[in-house]
Image 1 (cartoon, rainbow, N blue to C red):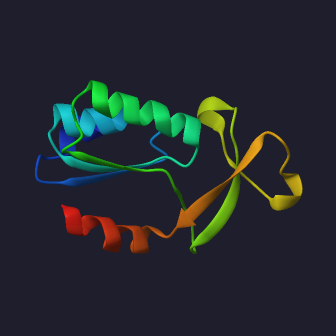
Image 2: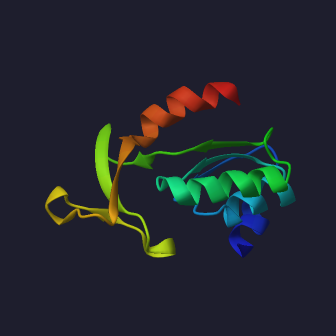
Length: 117
């Protein structure tokens, strides 16, 4: 967090990959006033992220995406109930505690979403 406070500027675009509930997103967009793209693949955590963006009145500064990022577009399986240690699992290891999420590459996501900033 100190790194963000020291180096991030209001004119910057901050990409919060694996945003969780948005601690860094809030710091970047509320405190520093930078624009942020917050990426969170787990739907229940994404809902909390959206709530935090709303509570902090940052809808104009933050674009939140409920996707994962990877080396190619597609789908991956994630654990869903491990809080901050949710992670990718192989299809062979997936069970009732996993969800399938859409995955995009960072490049394709940036090409699509930076046009709005």
